[in-house]
Length: 352
Image (cartoon, rainbow, N blue to C red; front, side, top):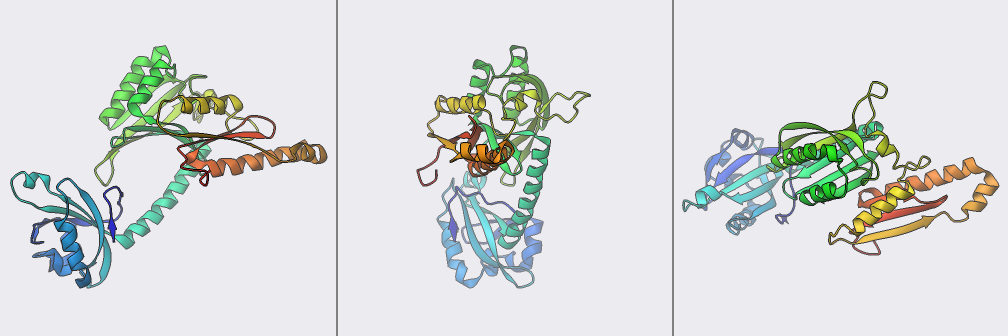
């Protein structure tokens, strides 16, 4: 089985090994030798399942100088059990510059990776629930993509406030009034700290990022930088309201609450309309799809069974719309039984 270099594989790490063009082991870390014992001291192929040896050799031999490749190979551990291993291969650039071609390989156990992934999914589920209870607004930055991503959770439903190139975000945040004049210098420091990957930071500024500039509030932008298992730097953080004695757990301040329809907790008409307008005029080469949804025979239902039953129908419909929209866009209530759904970069009608 073969994956192209665009796939991201991370999880339970067995160890790292470096081999030469004859597949002889040149060096390896302690974890690698501990897992495979002495079978790999001379050659990697000694511990590879016989039917996979030729595929392994071809994969290593055809690896490009600047390519990263993932593949799956069966290998024998110290208990003489063959297990599927995920290998991440790359040419050792430093040795290549000296005329020697070596291949660096990171080995991960596929079964343990699956177990680890399941455990992480459970942790993520609890994390999302906690974030929705606190109404926290989260931001992320990736040094690989240079994207800045601002979002929140409402019981596992992801609401995206912002997903932009970080440099473009800086430009439009300052030019379109998302940052108060008094906080511009602080915002620049925040921008530079995120870009530089400062280990921990916290900045207080008056911002309207969550509302698209309609309202501003004094908020705390706190975060930290870390390196993932593939060596890529990411920045994670929270946007919270400046704490007060009266409301010490307020997460995003009155500005966030002002965006919501009080009955459905979806965005209100003004906010979802501004959201749609901002995405249409952002200048990014991505499609924007707008859908208007209403509830059939709602007036008859409301008049026949009463307003409380009608409100329950509206809330149920809102919950379904929010769940189905997910991270593909956002939704808002624009009238009594009318909703607007804004989807971005949807490939076709079937997906809609």
